[in-house]
Length: 172
View (tube, rainbow, N blue to C red):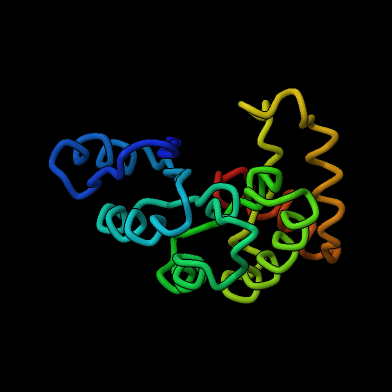
């Protein structure tokens, strides 16, 4: 279940109104994907953890590439790896709020930091197709080119493209 919380008020996922949905997600063995600015991700993850859900953080956690790795929330995003059941999707480089060059440079740095904290087995790539709200400037080919520009090792590439998703989704 994807919670696209961009542009929305911050939800209180600890509230009683969320409990039936979150419990049902757990019963089904599904995961929750969070799409929200990085500064809010740690609070959301902590609210979801009592349910024992697998949590996937979308688009590097939606940081602002112009603010670097030290921006509010990103350092804490790195520490969430130690809590288990948290994965990060390396996707939507064009959504990182900087210029294309800033976004790619940040994505490279962020990927190194994420790999160091999460390990390759907790990171996966996504094309972000159909690139909603960016359809005119981004294509699947653009996303694949951006992924290639990250310069991943063969081992990391295998994890991002195949192994992590296979394990998370139980495709083995």
